[in-house]
Structures are given as C-alpha cells and as structure tokens.
Image (cartoon, rainbow, N blue to C red; front, side, top):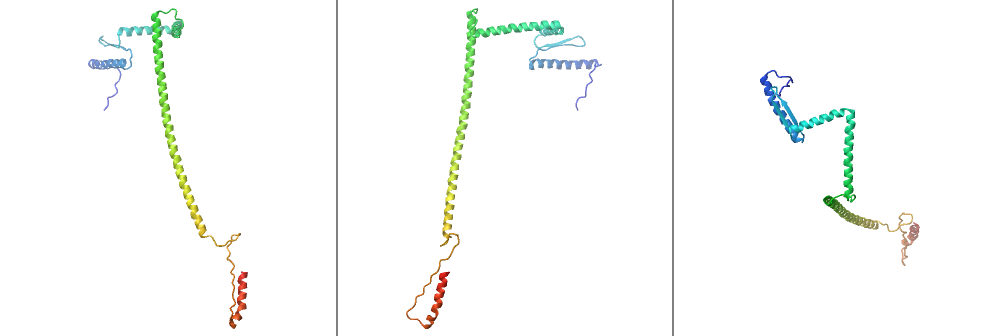
Length: 245
C-alpha cells in the first residue's frame, strides 16, 4: 500500500516533530547541493530549528550569496521608482555605448587603421591575433573545399553507375529488338511458304479461279466400222460442247 496523504500542519508531538525536522532538513540540504551541481546555480540555504540551532548550505560562500542577494534586492527596489528606472537605463546605455566604441576601435586597428598610438607589444598582439584568424580561415577554407570535393566525387560515382545501368538497358533493348526481328522474319518465311503451297494454278484479275478449257480432238481411223461411223457426229458435237465450256 502507498503512503497516505500527510496533512501539512504543526506536529504537536515534540519527538515526532524533531524526527521529521531532521529527515526533511537532510533532504532539503541534499536537494540544494544537487541543484547547485547539476544546474551550475549559486545556492544559499539557511535553516533555524525550533531550538534556535543554525543549519546552512552555500554552493560558493554564504557571504557572497548574501551580498549578491542584497545588491539585487536594492536594484529591484530602485527599479520600482520611475526616476530610478530612468537613471538605471541611462547607465546601461552609456556602458553599451562605451563597449561599442571600444569594439569599433579594435576593428579599425585590426584593419590596419589608427595604429599610431600603439606600442610594439600592442602591435605584436594584433599580429598574433591576425595570424590566428588567418589560420582559422585557411583551415575552414580547406574543410569547405574537402567537403565539396567529396560531394562531387560521390555525384560522379552516382552518374557513372547510372551510365553503366543505361548501357546495360540499351544492350538489352538491342537483343530484344534482334530477337523480335528474327521472329518476324521467320513468321514471314513461314507465311510465304504456306501461300506458295496453297496458291491456285490459274487465277483471273477478279480473284475467281477457273478451270482451263479442255480441247478434245478425235482422229479418224482409216478403217471404221459402220457402228463407229454412226457415232462420229455425236462425238463431234460433244467436242464442240466441251470447247464452248
């Protein structure tokens, strides 16, 4: 079972109250120490027991923590007054203006201007700063060039691989085309051979087949019987009929 909810009120039993104070005090000090280490915070903790005993913890120094607290508290009270706020922001503006002038002066000196008032040591310091800056610029420039060359090499490899794939596809298409042409030629030869076998002997221009006319010619033997002479006209008539057909 979980612990029940504790009512936050004064503990009447002195023994229980002392035990609870010791446990929670140790936990509070532990949490303050962890907060200062984990979050890099400046922590100051002061605890007085009911008997007047002092327990404290400071991440750096209790005196510095208290001084910082008093200073910030005074500034906070001053900022609540409009006149104090105006003075505060005027001081901040003046400080920022001085910093800006100093930075601009250093920049001009680094550019080789306004060097008349500088000593040899100052000039050597500026020279060292410029050499370090130039070295950093060269290193960065080499890094950029190296990265660009690496990227171009990767793109070149990809293009080369794509070119090889395209050549393979072209060769495959050529083989397929040759096989299709071969099949077409074979089918054409088969069709031509079939047409040659089934082609009729005689055709006319209108596409209908006709049979050639049959011509019969009977020779007259030198010696014929009477019966043969009697049938000769009939055979001649038959021959004329066949010629007409």
